[in-house]
Image (cartoon, rainbow, N blue to C red):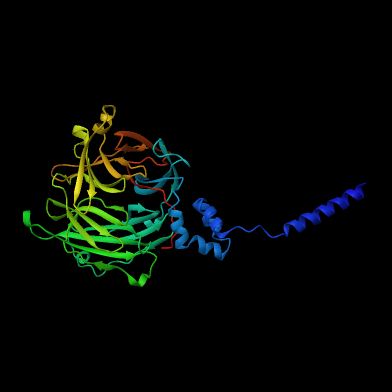
Length: 414
C-alpha cells in the first residue's frame, strides 16, 4: 500500500513539472502597459530591475505620458517646516498623503508619511512642484528633483545674464517648471528683473527671460528669450495648459498680465483690468481659466474678489465678490491666509500665514509654535470653506508652510 502511494506521488510530481514547463499564456503588450499604469510608483521602481525591456519601457516618454493621463488615487501635499534642534535651526520637507481613493471634496485630513529632506537641499528653499517635479532655489542656483525616481539635477548657472552678474539689492530671480505640449518637453524658465535707478512715475524695469530644457542635451544650456516690454513680476506664477501667467509692472503701479507660451516660447502682455487690485492678488486656475483671487478685504470685511479671464483675445474679465459664510467669519478674522493654488476639483487652497506686512513694507513674522498643521479648502461656487488637518507631523515647529498639492507620479529621466 505504501509502495503504491509513493508511485502515485511521483506521477503527480512529474505531471506538475510538465505543467510548469508549459508556455505562459500570451498577454498583449497593450494590456501589459495598461496593468503597469495602475500600479503604484514603488512597485514600478522595483519592476525596472525585471529586465532591460521593462526598464526602458517604464522610463520611456510614452509610458510616462500614459501615466500622466491616469489620475493618481493618492494626492500629496508638500509641507516645509523650520524648527530648533539643540539650539540649531533646521528645516524639513515632508510629504503628506490622502487616503487611497478618497475624494478630496469630502476628505478631512492628510497624513504625513514621507520625509523628503536630503543634505543636498541644505540652504535651498522649495519654490514649487509641478507634475512630480520639484524646483529648489538658492539664488541664483536652482536644482530640479523628481519625487518619484528620486533623481536630482543641478542646472548650470546663467553666466551670460547681465542682471545676475550685477550687485543690485533689488534684483529679483524667479524659476518656473512648465510643460511644452507640442514638443512634449519639460522646460525651466528663469525670470531675472530689477528696477532702474529712476524714481516715482519714471521708474521702469530691466528684465531677462531664460529657458532650459530638462532631459535634453545638457551642452545646450540656457537660452535667452526676447521680451519687448521689460517688467517686474509682482505675484506668484501660475502654470496651466502649456502656459505660465503672472502679474507684473511695466511701469510702477500699472499691473499687466504676462503670459509665456512654453511651446512657442513667446511672451505676451495684456493690460490688467483697471479694477483689479494687484496687492494680495494671486493667479489661480478656475475651471481651466486664468483667474485672480484678491484677499485684501478678507480679514476686515470677510469678502474676496475673483476676476476670471473669459476671453484672452478681447482681454475680457468677469468679476465676482464672494462673502464668507457667517459661520466661518471668525476663522478668516483671526487667521491670516494666503493662496497656494487649487485642487483638481477647483477648490482654492488657503494656507495659514504667519507673515504680515505693515503699510511701510516692514515684514513681521508671528511664530506659530505648533504641531497642529492644517489648510482650508474653499469651494468658490458653493461658497463653502472647510478645514483639512495635516496629521502626525513628527516635529514641534515654529514656522511651517505648504508648497503645493500634486497628484502625479513622473518617471521621466531628467
